[in-house]
Amino acid sequence: MKKLVRIEKVTCLGERRLLIEFSDGLIRELEIHRGLGGVMGALDDEHLFSQVSVDLNIGTIVWPGNLDLDPDVLYGASESGSCGVYTLISESPLQTL
Image (cartoon, rainbow, N blue to C red; front, side, top):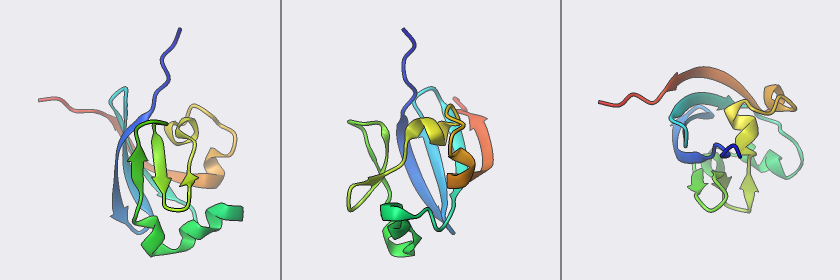
């Protein structure tokens, strides 16, 4: 059975950009789009957006107010809706020394 890839670390870089580290070592820099709609519209507030963290129990990024994004979409494993949520800035495997 294939193990699900989940988010282990997130850093808010400002200007709606996030640096996300996944459990398989992939690192992606993403720009999260404005105007996601519905309850996710709250993320248009820069102060709220900057409060991003990782919920290790569910393996994804979260914000106050029970807001979260699907880790499979952020990883790129799910094509549905990904281009409406973010723009990929860069991606690379984890560098080990």
